[in-house]
Length: 452
Ligand code: GDP
Ligand code: GDP
Image (cartoon, rainbow, N blue to C red; front, top):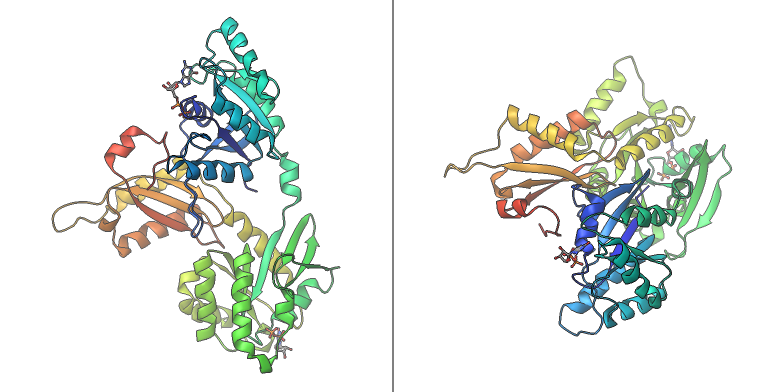
């Protein structure tokens, strides 16, 4: 469940940053780091009463100016609004209504997002009420007099603001765990799909906007819903005429991309082949939670040690997935197949887990005490200032350091292992972003969006 977003909108200098700082306190900025999506907006976690949300400051919105970078700010504001549950429009009560305010108000009225109007800089109670009243003319309902600096009025504003956020139930209800069943031809994907859905009443649901024949199956178990992705792609096989291999791998890549959790199916009789490694590499690149399903276990002659021997051999090839749970199953007999969705639940939870900044920094401090960062030949030592989790799905932790180049692969792997050992994250990849940060930036604090 991702937190609802509150967009803060307004002209420059009305006090948006001051207001955001008041809401978010000293909580760290969340820098969304999604490859391929340019996002300069800074999200900061905040809460009021028992509701958690993220605030995004959209930068000063100006309409009547054609300076070069303004369209960009406007675009950012629009993008922020598009994903927001509500907006708070901040105006300057001391300046009174300006033409810029009118334009923003008109634009906001056309958007499908609830808006509350905060009239800032209203420190004085009597004058504030009069100053605020002037803003009725914007047609956005009752103006709330506030002072972002002193905090007065912000409580009433937030009491009403959280009423507009989607309820926690709403957020959880429409949650589906997207699961892709992926593997080479003949490892038993279709058999596994049958075993998983056989007893259940699976609802086949075509996916809108994707290729014509991508078909998902929706399975419910207890109170959870699983969307099994592109099951048509699993069933359509032995299509030798079309070059089954090429076709299926691209289809698998697409399914991986859409998934939260990947069931990576292997044939235990074959072990880990080159093709399996190729798929594994893609799963890692996409950063998906993963369960390694070792199928056809019924066909193996076993004694008490066999499972460990198989486990060891397979994981020595898939060492870069050592965090993933392995399950030996027989899709044919159905044996242990019921363990798979339990593992999916666990992996999904870890995939979305958030760890507080203080815990992350405890782990870091400890790690550095045991083993200090490398020192270059010139005697310059790597220094880790702090770390913070910047996103989940998969968990992504930014480490702010003096110079990323001073941290070699060995040390990076060491820090990686420390996070695993201390924080678990079983079933999900964890990304570490090594970011250079100047001391000057640190002193200025994180009030402003710092591009790192
Ligand atoms: P932004 O450009 O909208 O992010 O505005 P800032 O938060 O940077 O504030 C602009 C100026 O307004 C700064 O000088 C702030 O100190 C001042 N300011 C912000 N909030 C208040 C307030 O509640 N009362 C008064 N009097 N000044 C404020
Ligand atoms: P897919 O191409 O990955 O969808 O694989 P299929 O589900 O079509 O299975 C390929 C072959 O492996 C079929 O002949 C299945 O009967 C066989 N198979 C699948 N699962 C198992 C299993 O658990 N044990 C055994 N012994 N054979 C299996």
